[in-house]
Structure formats: structure tokens, C-alpha cells
Length: 216
Image (cartoon, rainbow, N blue to C red):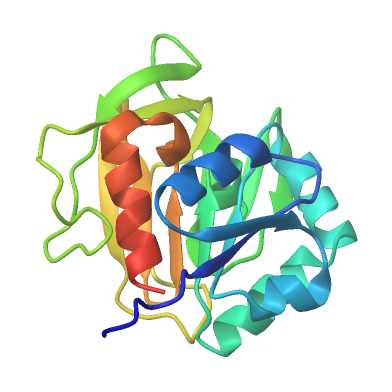
């Protein structure tokens, strides 16, 4: 009799910013064993760490560092342990964020500046398509016209590789269009992130989370 593999463990990092319950439910539906916590050891030892985020860039960075999340993310990535960021949880992975003229340092895992969207109507709220990169594992099995749910007023609209974590190389960058192109998702070895909310994106989001969990 062949035994099934144990479920992958995922910690949703609870640092006070993010829809942790909706993320927990979506990950559980995708087959993961999920826990919401900021406990250092549990966050370090889980198969995957998910970092949600809503609100202002500066406030999220402050909450993350107070909970030692910046150190946990860095240590996990140094050991090749998977981390996924969602919405502002993605934005804080970049070098810096600019809101209302205030510049705040991010985690600098990737280059780029999170800046106000250049569009006629802001925030960008609703469903949109994503142009996935060739060979993407995150978007595997998804049609090109699959739609994902976005709620944001800021994004990375230019990409360069002059800075960032030297342990991370050759990222696959997905783009979406709202006013002008912006980074919708990045998959880069152990580090993955989406600007959209997969936990609110119906079947497409469920497939994407299933792909991530399957990679752990």
C-alpha cells in the first residue's frame, strides 16, 4: 500500500498587516497545513512562509521589522527556504517605496521602486489579466486570459538588476497593464511574490497557490 506524502506546512506570517484569515483558508483549500503565527521557530521551520500585506509601505515595513520578519525572510532565503509575498507583502521585498513623497527602504531582495500608479483612476481595484513569463512554474496550467484580483495604488513599474539579493538570480517577471505596465508577479528561486491577491482570485488564484505549494 502506497502512503500519501504529508501535507506541506505553510506559516502565514502575522505581523499585523494582511488578510491572514483569507490567506489561511485559501492555502488550506490548496492542500497545505497552515498556521498563522509570528513565532520565530515555526516561521523558520515551515516548508513555506507566506507574507501578506495591506496598507502603507512604511507601516508594513515597520510592523515587519518589529516582528523580526525581515530577519526571518533573509535567513530563510539564505538557506533556500521558500517565501511568498502578496500585495504589500510583495512590495516590501523591493529596494524602496515612495508614498506621499516619503521614501522608505524595503528589504532590497529585488531592485526597483514601488511608486504611485500612473493611471487615470487609482486605486487599481478589480480583475485583470497577467502576462506570465516563459517557463513560469507559478502560472503553470493557467490560460493566458486568466484574471486575477488586484487592489493597489502603488506598484513597481520599472525593473533593473543593479541591486538586490546576490543569492537570487534570473527572476521570471510577470507584467500587467493599468495605465502603464507594472510588475504583477515575480518568481525567483526560493522567493515568489504577487501584486494581486491569489486568495481572492477564484479558480485561477487557487491554481496558482496549488502550484506554489507543489514547489515546496
